[in-house]
Length: 500
Ligand SMILES: Cc1cc2nc3c(=O)[nH]c(=O)nc-3n(C[C@H](O)[C@H](O)[C@H](O)COP(=O)(O)O)c2cc1C
Image 1 (tube, rainbow, N blue to C red):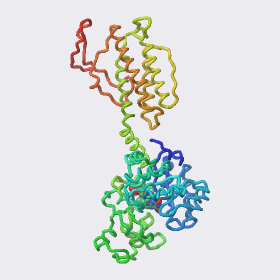
Image 2 (cartoon, rainbow, N blue to C red):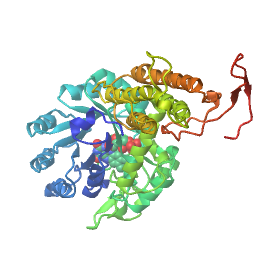
Image 3 (cartoon, rainbow, N blue to C red):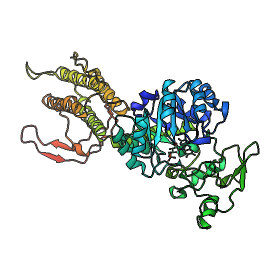
């Protein structure tokens, strides 16, 4: 999958980040995502005292980088200090003034990512020293900082704070969303709801099941679940509590139905109240469905609970596919290379014995020399593709070996184009040089075969079945549609029914 600046800055393989999802994150989830090459984020805000040592537990499950997250509307310096002492090197902040937390983190050598919901907030955080900004769109799950959609917020923030890297959050739950986020100018994607529905997440089973069946319009943006966190808009599923409140006239806090009612319990028996901001975790019991089930509009794309590693694999594959579709130039060049394989296959196969050394004049090259040159062209193409351009002339070899070497060189260039590795030169340079040149030489070889009395019959190449990625001699069986009526008169092509 494509690498971005974020991969180098954070030491990760793919720019996919498991967003902090409050009490649903535990060391198992974080480590699974980091071990899969992304970045796991441990929320430590609601951990108490030394319990913050969850970061130490995470260190025991992964050697890969991971981050911790703190909601900073209350003073959580003590928690930050504990995590930094434990060796955490990536700190994410949300919902408050980041300045002092950034200073403390930087002193400990940590990178700081601040989540923002507006350009003004992003700019302030960068001025305060934040190293990266999460642009959180309005469609996001959990507490929502701004009111602008991800599609508009990401490019706006990216332009406003360039070159500071931006990470897109809100509404992303599959590889297409990740590809779109990068196309919008983000260097990575931050997925919350998708990872709540992971096997490792500490969310209650009922909550996970609801995520699997809910649609985007089953989520609501409100300030309803405010016990423990007031005046903080959030997006969550419309559950029984929400519906009860709505049907009673959406009354303001203090006049809502059943306020103060204990609807669930923690393992130690502590009640969790209706309208609490605490989500249902796997250790709670009672009417957990009545608790806030944070979810973004991205829930539409979440159909089942899966292991985090499987989610990561799916995201990587899907985003690669999305990039392939989006990268029209790369696809076009691969098509040109496959076309060359098709046409070359036709002139190289079934050449008569001795054709390699057929010579029509002193100054002209033999077919074997032309074929060696065609192989050289694609060694050169690969060297350009990887950014180490070099040319070398090879000696002609036996026809079949020369043919195999040409297809091998062609295949290596196509493999590079099929990978997520960047192309070190422009697509145009590879087309105008090696590809166009080799196509010309295919024509030359076809002419030489005719002069050698062993014509390759023509076909309407626009109808050929060219499959991108098939670059060997087996590209597809050559067709014979046209034939030459006689060898001496004008060339008259006529279409023939063919079965070859
Ligand atoms: C269950 C849940 C809990 C969340 N808790 C936190 C949190 O503790 N800290 C934080 O910075 N963001 C939190 N968020 C917001 C996410 O970090 C992220 O911005 C959001 O999930 C992105 O939208 P998405 O859900 O469509 O992927 C939470 C989101 C969810 C769904």
